[in-house]
Image (cartoon, rainbow, N blue to C red; front, side, top):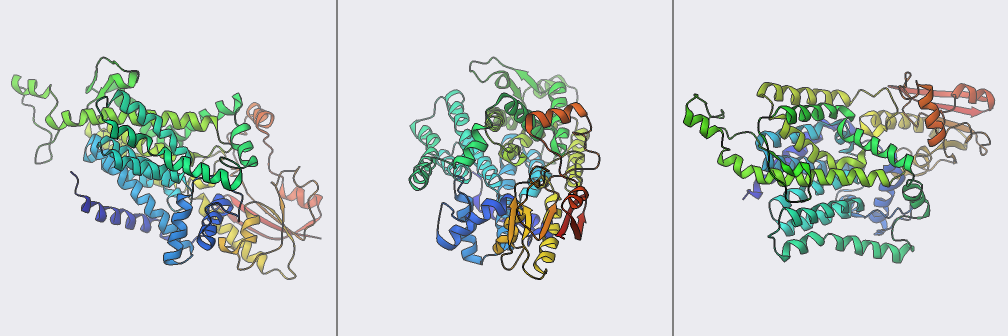
Length: 542
């Protein structure tokens, strides 16, 4: 049994490592959906003990992350530093869980490489200090899978319950677990099945409480319309599925791991086929043998060509024999979890954000790295090393097509620009009415978000498209900014048929030209700010 005391220095070390990497971002004001929902909801709990927020529109999300932040603020004071450090602690737990799970199913090299690559993967790295729900969901989901494989069923129930309370979408893990017990653990007792169903209880309790307080089982009319009803169209489902596949297997240099795993599958000599008596499909018929056990000096057993040696090498070592069942169990859980996340987020959700797929990243990395390490040693190390370098480069390199700023350190540029804009606007005389679009509206209205010391007078528009600014409300100052990443050479919009498709089926409208808008509305440029392709323009009404 693993020495649990050894986990404490491990998580402290990982936490310190992440703090060092994020040192320049720990005091940043809140960004996008942080400012729009999660921080106001946590602030409501911190100030008034409310599980259902009133400072923002209730969305029905399970409240664990907001409660966690509220408790941290009560202990250490309300500040951006406490928030960022608190989220990095969750990220450290997720990295440690990936390390232990990888070690359990594939050996120490799999665990170490999985933990390292997860920690520096651009999406995970950017999300590590942001107060969103998906990081905590990924953390507790990873630990739940580890505990399930170790047959610690009630510990699994606790971890899975925490995952569901972090974000209700984590409930998709449970059908995979039930199938796992049915087909892979046929001899388990009643206690295992009780533990497998136990995470439903806190979710049902939350749904009942939310319904009593709001009249809805989840969300609100606008939330349900955007994330459920409007998403159930064939085109949106197809587009979402393609996007989700891209986000997991291609985006941010994940394609290097995908390609390496495919090459390993094709060339591996350690892949055998066994008959399948369950409905788990082809993947359950494939037995992946992890690397052979090394001797005490760390080298692989020598092969002197003797018949006895060759005969011994044809049989898996005791170490490998112990790992094979656990790895096959892991494949079942990892593939099932990833497939259900792909399916769920293709069917529901108006916004196609890569962070929604974050709970599938740790298991994907462990599976891919286990297969890659089946390649010849130098090749395997080269693939992992090059992937690590590319991940770090992707922190700073933006793709040549639109993407959410939160997918890498572009979110830092966004925040820095909006800090500059807020400092300029709050210094203007006469308390002018500032016309802008969300999230800048909340940044200027809510001092606790970190941009202003007192609320400014704000008028809102939905976006900066021409239709939104055709008949704007009265304003004194117009605050324009790059709400979407629009590179000079946008690959998606370089092809006229694709642009027409996006405009016809997805309502795409190009952002209004700042110069054309200034001419039409008779505006005078007061100040402009630019940072790595993002920009802010502030105009006065003449």
